[in-house]
Length: 112
Image 1: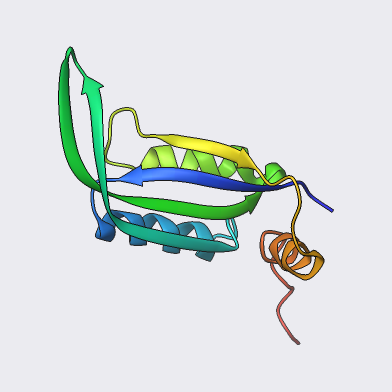
Image 2 (image 1 turned 90 degrees about the vertical axis):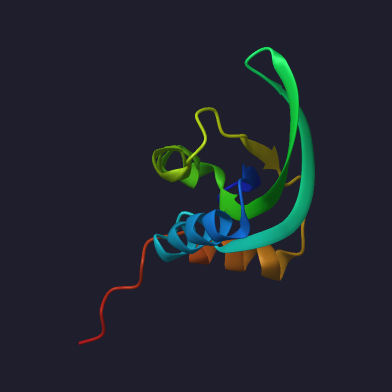
């Protein structure tokens, strides 16, 4: 079974997070996208401290899909240096992990 991962992404707003999540799921790069709006970030950028409201996007995927998922997120994300990080899933329920592997695998062939 492929190694499961969570991908944590910060987005400027809920619309961007929803767009990224929908594309990732539609293209089978992730099995699920969770949007957590209302996050407040305090960060250093270009020599100054700033803050902003953001939306957290959490994608449930597998390690074998990571390179394609990262490339797609980087191509679509509006930030210059977006926070896109992988968190390994050390363990989980067997039915969930099986579903995750199935939904990030190859698409079913069309029915004849």
